Length: 131
Image (cartoon, rainbow, N blue to C red; front, side, top):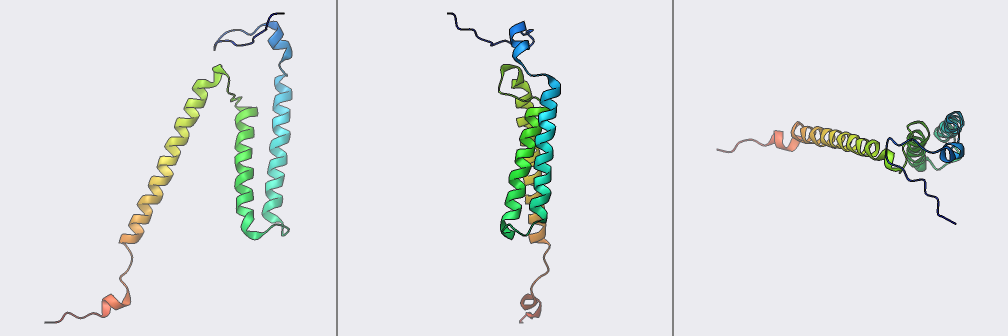
């Protein structure tokens, strides 16, 4: 028997076998919507419950937010590891780099401004110049 491979280059039209095996778009979107709604409801529950340790609520919300981003990338933006998603993944990585640089740069600048704009302590104001 021959090994059937479904590798294809970007822009190639898939064969009928591959198209018949792939799930419909409506099914993919419905599954994504269901998972996104479950994650959203879980986030609201985590934020409003007293059953969790209060220090872990932020971490739980961060994990659920990352999972929500993953669901959106896979189910709605169809970002996969296939050869036809290479440019999309590179564009996403570049966008994340720019966001990281802007956020970290802003925090750095604001922290530096805060350090330089602080009022002097009361001890420094009470020091008199000696002749």
